[in-house]
Structure formats: structure tokens, C-alpha cells
Length: 184
Image 1 (cartoon, rainbow, N blue to C red):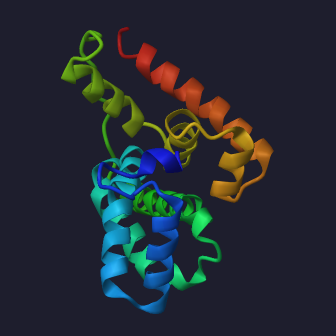
Image 2 (cartoon, rainbow, N blue to C red):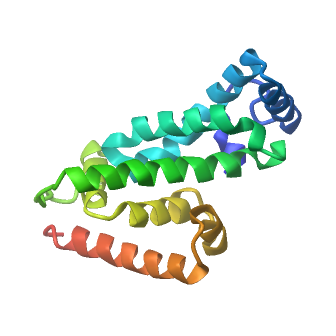
Image 3 (cartoon, one colour):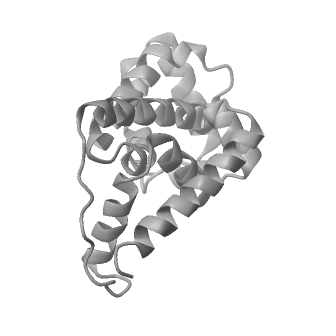
């Protein structure tokens, strides 16, 4: 996933370039930090969006602020994307929990299943995801979008492997039930 994190600019995926940017940012070089944050922004957004939903942009911003403030704590530039992933998931779950406490959403009826590629499909999936807990959205995103194995998910979420397995089971079941319960 780190190899997918960079965009189209030259050097974004080059470990030597990333190491140089991290070292510069850790020394306080503002240009290096700016370039590093530019590289990380789309990656963080892809992580935070599916977990924090409406608060995805805010979670991404909070995660990037945390990266900015704590870059000196990163021991190895090679661990950059894993370190950022942990921060992004933590912020996304935190903001999603806060919204969950303040906003009670009513179940909505989903329309007939649209064809793959139609915008309605993404909206229907988003509607179903809104009914899952932030922890369930996080475990699904890390496992099925980021492609991490269960042990890696456990490390990112700082929970035991058994917890990841039970959350995955419950999240998949809840997703299936919500999807199927909507008249599918």
C-alpha cells in the first residue's frame, strides 16, 4: 500500500526521496515537510474517508497535523506509510465516535441495487457503512481496501488478533444484514 500512496509526481515512491524528505522535515525544513504532506494527503484521505464518513476530511486534516507535530518520533523513513496509517485510522475512529455520540441517524431505505459503476452503488454502500460502528468500518477498510492481513490490522489498531477476527466477522455480518435488509 505504501507503493500506492504516492501520486504522479516524480520521486514520490522513491525510498531515497522519501528518506530525504523525512530527514529534512525532522530537522525543521518547512519545504521538505510541505512536500511530504503533499505526498501523504491523498493516502491519508483514502484511509480516513471510509472510516470517518462525513468527517473524513476533518479526520485527514487532524491526522496530517499529528504527522506534522510528531514527525521527529518516526525512527525509520521506511516505516513512514505504516506510521501514518496508524495515525490516520486513530483520528478517523476518534472523529467517527464523536459524531456517533452526537448524531443519531435513522435507518434509510436503500433503492434497488444499481449496476456496477453507477454512482448510486457507491451511495448505497455509503449508506450501509453509516450503520456500522467506526471500529467495524476501520477493520473492513484496513482488511479489504488497504489489503492488510489480520495480524497487520491488529498492529495498526493496537488490539489482539482475536479482536480483529471477531470485529471482521461482526462487521461483515452487519454489512451483509444491512445490505440484504434493504430489500436486496
